[in-house]
Length: 191
Image (cartoon, rainbow, N blue to C red; front, side, top):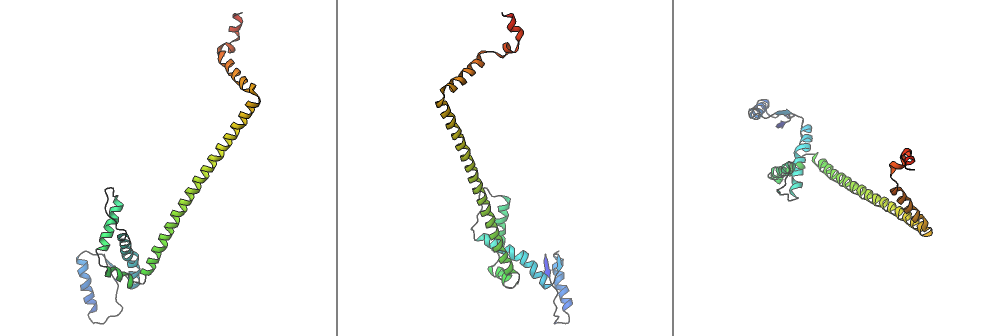
């Protein structure tokens, strides 16, 4: 894609002819021509070209290298680094120096990184608080169970018959089959 913006100052009498001839070169190469004002061009360039080069140079600073487990996304990142850093630093500097929107984009990147860091910190704090709450709840339940078991043990020590009574009841229930208790006719025939 090739963008151009119309010049407001026309210093040569045959300027329109020369401009059309110049543009026809790009059209012959099947470039999409987009007519823009200078202001629009600079804003679009800052939002696309400067951001692309800035991102590529930031990632280049990380010394990224291919790994055996690269995802398609990471391969794209590596291509971005390769494409942007193969251009000269002067090109990148020109995108920054001569575009009034570029410093704003640089500031936006700083703020975006700060927001992402705050989101990560908030998630980390949430998970830590949740784990602490879960551990506290678990400890409270365990303390409550221990307390109930101590109370039951103290009751059994104070009244040992409670323990024998429970054991006797369980023994009685096991010795009498439920079918005999449920069938009164069977009980009368055995007498």
